[in-house]
Length: 461
Picture (cartoon, one colour):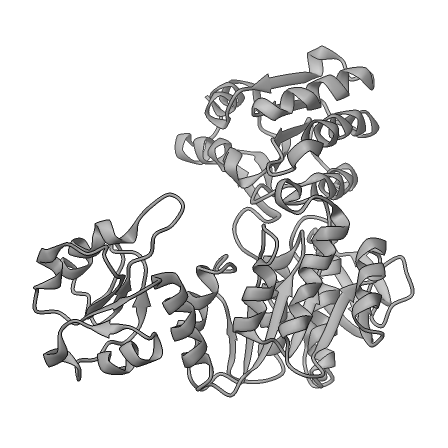
């Protein structure tokens, strides 16, 4: 795109008129990774101000700068590089993303939910690749008002179907995301006690997720979890034409059969098609059902596909199994809330093997006033499961300790650590070959530090 076009799209001012016909290819917010010919957009965030890194972006070969008026130094303003100033650089980025998206004739799938968004996104993407061409998937966890624009900028112009993860934490955020994506189909995996600090109740979480439909394409499809009663009640207020998936409730799409194979995988048969799930957790079946429902609703069939060959994988720390010197870790610590911890514990309880079974839980964040109650309830539930040792990590997890104690869990089987580093240092001396270890906690607790310590040191001391 030319810089005079950029100024017009964003209602900005091109400071270097003589560089109007200069062009850029690609967009970056990170001066450390920007590539030559990319536009650097300087954004004031909650923790960092991108305007402080404009000089570094230029030194790294940025094609030009999009910045907020009044935030650039005189030195930057006088350099021989295209600079566009706007009243709000984040709003301008959203305008630019919308403009680019309007040039691509692709059907867009939006995926949201309290748990399973990223895995469902990956399953949907890989399933669509098996039945059609030119499918795009948003990278990593680019799912908010900063990440989604970057995901759109990275979308090839020839894309026919785009699979986009959409995450929210505050009221009104989903409406803004949906007004940008304008999805043709929305998947809502489930709703639970997440971001209650900002959203207040699980009902409000459901309503916020469903607000995506207010900005979706006319006659957009809505795919929802039939086993989630709060979500179903709220979804029926939005539309009576729901596409549903479920295990326990009558749904549009349910498994014909679920069975383990000899390699530790779960084989799920849907409409006669067999899929192999290598990931930990019964909830992965729900993620597969959501993806399957979306593919079928878009009009595709798996009749000509060997579905057992579809590689159903997800991102790091989302149910992956890692073995280090004879210790098997189940790394499920990308995030956590009461529902995902309960589901994880139930799946771990059913998981065979392990001379000793060890559970390591971290704090659940952003639960607001309900935090103490939810942590206490998790502790109380621990008495229902088979384990040899449990370690809890973080300041909020003292309530897990209290709940576990009241439910009869003995102190000898219960450890508490202030942070993941302290837990990792102790686990090096505790864990032994043959142990089966489950890691689950909110991302901010960084439980992956424990697994990294074993990988870096080659196992136990």
